[in-house]
Length: 295
Ligand SMILES: NC(=O)c1ccc[n+]([C@@H]2O[C@H](COP(=O)([O-])OP(=O)(O)OC[C@H]3O[C@@H](n4cnc5c(N)ncnc54)[C@H](O)[C@@H]3O)[C@@H](O)[C@H]2O)c1
Image (cartoon, rainbow, N blue to C red; front, top):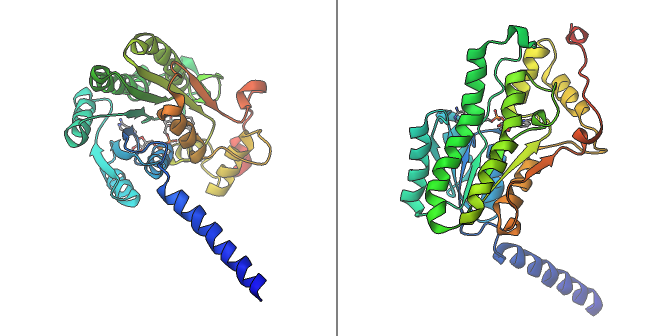
């Protein structure tokens, strides 16, 4: 009986110790202030959640105010929403100024907002250059505006981590429509060009290239290619693109990569493209099933 009691006490102490260490140990982003564009949904929202879990206060900047307010509500008191269309430089500047007005610093700027643009036409001969401009405006110009205004406040203090979302579509051609792929090929170049300047001021800049994740952005675009497929069938197609055995790429995988690059663990890492693709770009090209399969 005594032995049983001793064993139970041991179990209680063990779990109390585990619980207290997990609640009292500081997170990897304790006290950091982050701004995430496109933070209302998908990868951005999950990253905001992970950053908050690790001790950060996060500003969600998004063009979609309904979704942005909901995301901030869902994530609790350490999340705030600021409406921002990244194609309008004044709004990006305003988002950064809002962060500065509240907290006097910006530690992490994650330029994540992105659009795919029209999936068709698939051929360069039919390309609508106005549509191309729109994709570049959001994915490249919007990113550049974020880097510019984050640098404005990070450079004087000599520290900060800037992140950008690229894509495996910026590593392998032929996965996405040309405007999207071209915009994503540009991001690692932008990062390396700017890292060459920012390293002198202690500001790091890196990008992450995710594989396919079944976020609203991807689901909507696959719906255009496979209008008759159900959501489950589309998720299966997306899952079928992955090669890594036994698991799939999820929002949290990108959030964890952002956590590493955003934290002081990566204090000497800059100009880097962290590819989170389970090896897919290492060895094969992708073949999608025909839309006729879903009649
Ligand atoms: N999901 C994937 O498979 C995948 C793969 C590689 C790269 N990416 C990239 O990840 C990033 C996030 O995409 P996601 O998959 O989470 O999609 P998502 O649609 O869930 O999120 C994108 C967010 O960006 C916002 N946004 C769009 N235009 C904006 C603008 N002009 N200003 C501010 N916000 C704007 C949207 O409102 C939305 O909240 C994008 O840059 C995308 O290209 C996604």
